[in-house]
Image 1 (cartoon, helix red, strand yellow):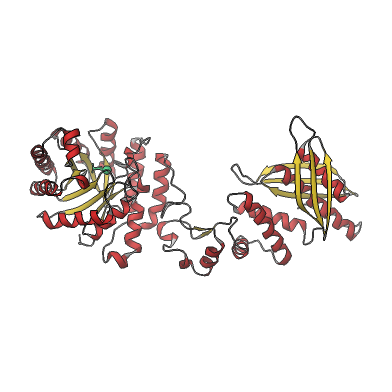
Image 2: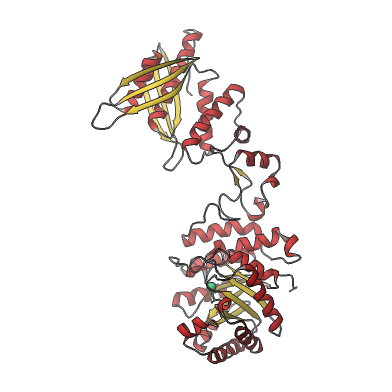
Length: 514
Ligand code: KIV
Ligand code: ZN
């Protein structure tokens, strides 16, 4: 392996699984391990075999089944731990034992109740025991970033002298800051003699896990311990996908170093881990978040439509994500709106496009996200209405409840005029329809009334279809809104507009559906 290879050590199944509330069974761990192998990580830390029977079983099953990556098992320095870890990983094509003991004053005093000399003896003996089983031994001085540097280097030297080939420096409590952590890695490389790879293991308590790991790489670390979606104890570990994409995207800064990860598998791996652990991926999570390639601001959308690189540094397909998504919302401009419609095969021009855009903006003010289904419905409403509407709603005010008679006041634009009417009804929808009938003078018999939800969620778009029978003509109208009373009023007015057009054209024409 060349010096430029940054080994990706995935600890999703060990440190990641230690996240509060996560408990994966053997089958789920195997599924994740198989996917990690497809992703191309170098090492999978499959678990902590002494911790529980389930952990042992999972590590053993992964060691037996998964080919490609090194399979590591975690162990304290006690021989019982090491023997048990070996029992589980021995079946692997490439087994590794990962031995750790804390070296910080607080851990040695309060947790281990050991002196420095005892810790040194434990580290040396534990590593030697592991090296008796395999040539691939990793050693970690737990809470390394809060340890006395000289003492930690002495322990690390003992580990190398007893057979450790990887020295992993944990920032166990996420205390480090990049510059300082980078200096620590450089100091270890300079001080500890022998043939070994230096590794980072950074927690995210200050949100610096990825930055600290990358500082470690810049200082010479050639293994990074990380987890999919940044899972791990407390605030988590360094996120694998961010480390990998930072090294790839900023090769101008990191120089020749590279990982062997198949980045196109990142999004799939993230989704699998999220589904099986029940830990959602935050929407704006770097690289794998669902908004990582979404643009809503009109200016950004315009830029991305011209050239993706105006606002994107990663091509979504390289991480297995969907290509740049133009998310239509209240900040979107006409350019993105028209472009999205065209991509959906919906063609509106001139006044129809303007009307649809105005309606879209009104909707976007009330609806968090406009989906393709919303747009289809909106365009169907626009096309169904034909090019010219006589009436459009300026305002609708409805009152209801169990204590008062439902009533509605509607103000309509009639060309350049305004018409207003108030009506009572046996419900708010009935009152709104009554007010429109009074304002327009068009009353028909309601033949059919259907309400359905176009989209899911609390702000779902209500799609109302009404069928009216008036003047011997049957017309249907369609209305969309996040509020079902408004959707009904729009549907009714849509039908009224059609009737008015029919009247204007003469008695022979008969309208059909929306
Ligand atoms: O955070 C930590 O120190 C660890 C060690 C076991 C490597 O997870
Ligand atoms: Zn950890």
